[in-house]
Amino acid sequence: MKKEGVFRIAIVLVFAVFMLGCSGNRKDVSDGRLASVASTETEMTSEMASGEEIEQEDISADGVDVDLTQLSSTMVYSEVYNMMVTPESYVGKTIKMHGQFAVYEAEPGNESGVDYYFAVIIADATACCQQGMEFVWNGEHKFPDDYPKEGSGVTVTGVFETYEEDGQMYCHLLADDIEMD
Image 1 (cartoon, one colour):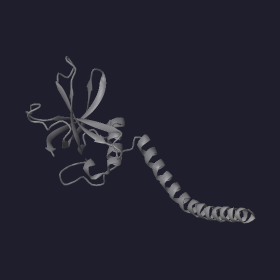
Image 2 (spheres, rainbow, N blue to C red):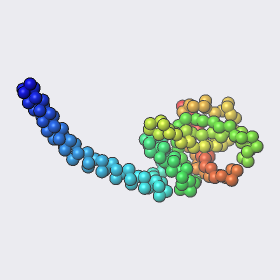
Image 3 (cartoon, helix red, strand yellow):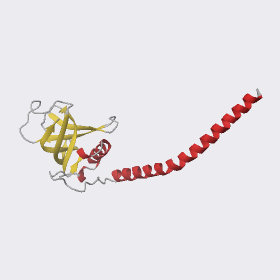
Image 4 (cartoon, rainbow, N blue to C red):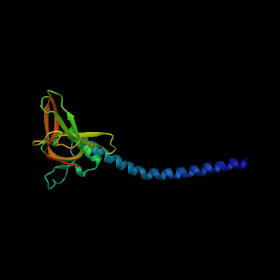
């Protein structure tokens, strides 16, 4: 019995020393990383909350001011959210985005006189949250004949505009062309 008790105590002590040694090293390494990540997240959150847009340094050769197709899914979701919160920062800019095509039937007798609203739906990195951007396709296009199948991939490039309908302000892209996957 005495040998078993001593052996158990020795194992517990070795285990405790091992755990204390490892946890101290992890803490030293992770504290710096966590502080850096927290600082970066705080800066990004404060920029977004203050209404500052994420600037694109160069306008692309095709005249796109904000190309969301070149960003990660998390950044795209964040930028579209920012467009909804501070639309005045984007009015008149050419936006390019890729997502799923969606159609919403308008309520009969609505102020705009349209039958359908069309949108590009973008999910965040975990696909748990979604943002949508309405678009209007310039020209003579009939739904459903000329449009992609609902839920299919679509890339829309258009000028960001705001409009008022039924006393509410909305935004959409005025698109000359859409690319279907």
